[in-house]
Length: 88
Image (cartoon, rainbow, N blue to C red; front, side):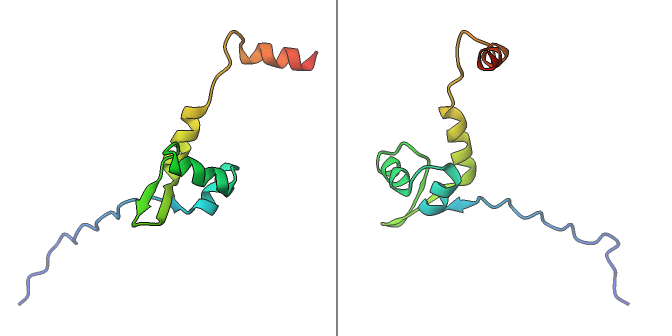
């Protein structure tokens, strides 16, 4: 007689995958040129991962955070003030 385990094994939850973009994909996603993406990579201005000597990838979540950090909010006006000026 075999013993049956009344509790099935708990399935392991797969780790979330990080979406990695190449320079062309990062350029398309961000709206910057490939040349700009590569130049910023050389200057270490943009988040990236080096894979060996020549391989570079850009983590999408890091790019999203980086773009948010580059955003400069206007000072001295509220968004409503700006809308009123545009409508005039």
